[in-house]
Length: 251
Ligand code: URA
Image 1 (tube, helix red, strand yellow):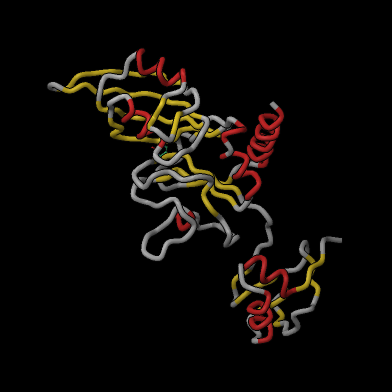
Image 2 (spheres, helix red, strand yellow):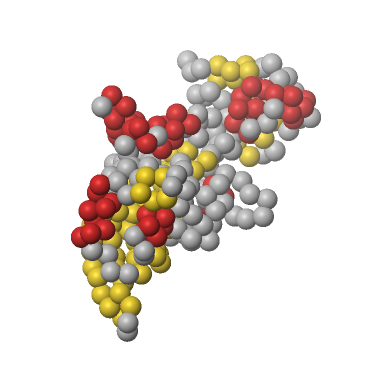
């Protein structure tokens, strides 16, 4: 039969308006149910079969949305910003108005960012207690060596306030240009402290020149997903993430 809901409640949930605003819109004749203008906020609608539109735009009742974005540099990791374009603004197909990024990437960092309105999953993915791996690719100014690997593995003291959890540092390539050394690395961390990767390298006297997140838990950044593009997570990927956080919670 399909779940039934009052029209004003539906409208307020889907369009992120207060119940009062939703009622006013309905009374003003801005809302149609199956192409017919309805002025009664209390009218029940069927979530499966009825088509509701606001100002002629069809609305969609989906409780949760999950997107994987390849964040470009220059965009802020926020839901809304008065002055700047945000990562949520890039999700043009979004149906819900309450989406937010799962954690923050710096403005100049690129790569994998999950965007959702599932606060429970986001919290679990970010909790250091659950040990969800976040993998970064970085280009570093300096010669990253086995000493750095050891320090990172043992739990690096970043500054007086922060000692990082053990992190896995893989050195991909080291080279010299003129008098300077450069390195490319993969770093796997389980936390998400402010500027964490940059601060970890600064603590060993090196500078991050370029940073990209390539994985979070079981979700990897697809090579085919261009910068600034996104796709919805599949049902299977969502289930896998949920299983992963619940398994890690029990460890
Ligand atoms: N660590 C950083 O320093 N910056 C990011 O954006 C993410 C992790």
